[in-house]
Amino acid sequence: MKVAVLGSGIIGVSTAWWLRQHGHEVLVLDQRGGPAQETSFANGGQISVSYAEPWANPQAPLKLLRWMFQDDAPLLFRPQLDLRQWLWGLAFLRECLPGRLAPNIRAMVALAEYSRTTLRSMRTDLDLSYHHLSRGILNFYRDPHEFDQAQRAAGVMRDLGVERRVISADEVLAIEPALASQRANIVGGDFTPDDESGDVHAFTLALAERCTAAGVDFRFNTKVTRLVSAAGRVAHAEAVAPDGAFETHGADAFVVALASHSPALVRPLGVPCNVYPAKGYSATFPVLDDRLAPVVSLTDSSHKVVFSRLGDRLRMAGTAELSGYSRALNPVRCQALTALATELFPGALDVSRVSYWSGLRPSTPSNVPLIGRTRVPNLYLNTGHGTLGWTMGVGSGRALADIIHGSRPEPEFPFLGL
Ligand SMILES: Cc1cc2nc3c(=O)[nH]c(=O)nc-3n(C[C@H](O)[C@H](O)[C@H](O)COP(=O)(O)OP(=O)(O)OC[C@H]3O[C@@H](n4cnc5c(N)ncnc54)[C@H](O)[C@@H]3O)c2cc1C
Image 1: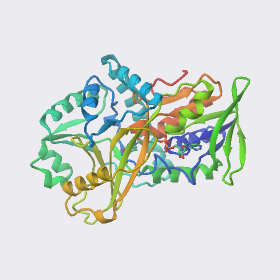
Image 2 (image 1 turned 180 degrees about the horizontal axis):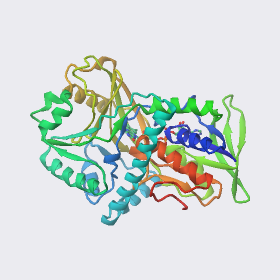
Image 3 (image 1 turned 120 degrees about the horizontal axis):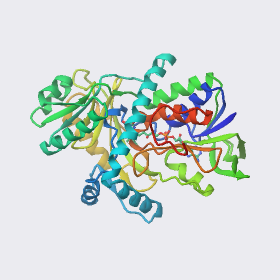
Image 4 (image 1 turned 45 degrees about the vertical axis):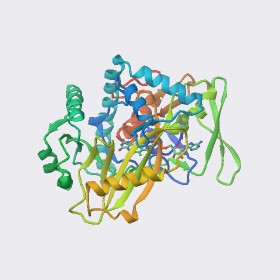
């Protein structure tokens, strides 16, 4: 069978790899000049299975309302004249109902765990290097109330079989001595030794190389503009070729892995796809002094930012802004990231050579991605991975390839159409 995968981020490339492993002919189309040039370019780097929690919970609506008037809020809803944004917001409120939280967490953890196991085996089997570190994730708290709440969340995760240890401030420093300057501020933490970190961009590039060697056909600088149906199926994808020419690509099956741009292509076919962009920022610093920079991947809970060591660089990422498709960098937010990094790790980083980036997290109201069949028999979705596309990426690709191939995917997850 010939399968066209639209999008070459972590999700599209993983799907292409696993489809090829099943023996299918695979064509990948992407508008950019290479793989992982959009959201999978410079994210926070965490494989955070043990923190696979949705934004939507019973406390979220009040918090969001408060944050609307706070420019540096960790999650900011900026109302636009955009019906899709409002419909997304309403669906988000539904996901905040008490009965929704537990099934959403269960689905996210199941897929994330499956993905981490898959990632580990691919790393070894394919000899992929991407600055990965298996040192766990350490979440630290400054606010005793937040620390208290976190202990309850840790309990929920432990009930799902996830190892999330609540630890004292001294233990926080023992695990990551680079936080020494913050001893007086930290009240405690939680530590998830099984979690990992690594460079999603380097991984996706390396996997795309393996795909090419295995016979996957990548066409870059090719923007897909429409999916054309005939007799109730997708017949071909219309696209603009690198030279600007109009072209069409036929296939037996089509996978939409276009992150926040997925709805624009599938909605005209009557396929629901409630994915909306949540803009996030990252800052990447060259490390000046190895002894002063963290190695363990960190989450600063008060500021909702994460840190991952990627070789001789430190990546910091955070903030979520639901404000449409603009990737504009707000200088105030950028400077706030650098100021915090300098405060936490004095002398560790070369802030004069910082590199700022923004990306659009493809977010569903529940944070549960859309993976599986659609009402159009040969059209499949693999999108909406939001804050956890790196954590769930290779597992999502493998599970969808199984579905397309006609086998049952492994994880207990609400796959579409199964
Ligand atoms: C600041 C930030 C920090 C994050 N930190 C983490 C983290 O620590 N851990 C984690 O698990 N996740 C994290 N994420 C989330 C993660 O990065 C995303 O969920 C993931 O990268 C999404 O992958 P994707 O393949 O769906 O999207 P993308 O990588 O965006 O891929 C979609 C592809 O589709 C292509 N495309 C779009 N439209 C068209 C078109 N019309 N025609 C052709 N091609 C098209 C694009 O060029 C792109 O290559 C973070 C995200 C952000 C923004």
